[in-house]
Length: 193
Length: 193
Image 1 (cartoon, helix red, strand yellow):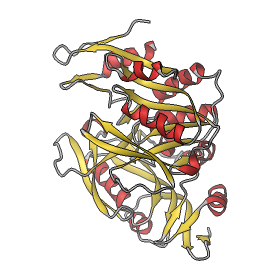
Image 2 (image 1 turned 30 degrees about the horizontal axis):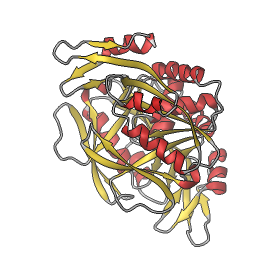
Image 3 (image 1 turned 135 degrees about the vertical axis):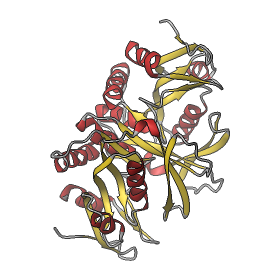
Image 4 (image 1 turned 90 degrees about the vertical axis):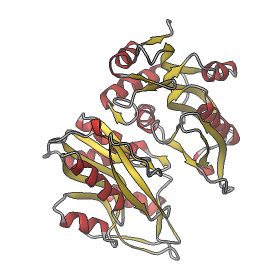
């Protein structure tokens, strides 16, 4: 999506260690006007699907997921991250490795908030290795619900997450797909449609 | 606000240890239609103030804060929680004790995202002892910005946080003010206007 790509080129920063910083407009300070336009694009992309619920993961996916759930007029659930290995049996859970933080979180969703037979749209800000998205898909499947698709703001398309999950037959729509970036020159290139 | 009080009476649960659970509609599974109406009420309550920015704290305040920032058409910043004591000098930070989790988090906001002279509206889901809100006020003051008010969904009015912060001259607007609750009978009573 041109709007998001242009904004990343203007305000994104490439940092050492393969990091694309978009915290001035997406995931620390949030440009809500921008996020609303991106939410409208997700609504358009998934408007042919029946969506009963939106699911994201704390914390930086919650803002965009809120705006998407608002347009679909459905509840939003966010998976919580817990470092505890002591999981109550009233939750669905899945271990998720974080490459950013170098640890493993267990993500948790209370069983009451994902129901068998429902259609769930996943929303998150980033997709790279795909660990978080795989965790969300796992908890949806544990609940006997169906993933109708995943809407992602920024995908690092040179990493495996997106193609692995698409290969499972899941519709993954990423509004900006980064093909390459360079922290020395600061350049970001996007996948051409 | 009657709408929120009625919903708490219907769907809230009083758990042992002075816990009011509203996770079926506010802070795990989120009823976005409800939150939008609550955001409209905050917009009305603070409509006479100049608001340049909304500030909340991860994770459960982000949804309502997103909807409030959308109405004011201003950016939303969320303070991050870090358990690290190793704070970079590019952030404003403040230690915040969590009674819920029994630990101390340092909350962090990157300096670029709070600017001297700005008017900041604080939004959060809960106010009890007031630790989180005091931390947010502290980082706003570190930045040389001004707190124009605080919008809270649920205040435990029998605890000190709200009255302490109001005594500092800050306008705190809580949409439901719990006067008492009892986990044996399950009853919740609200402060009468």
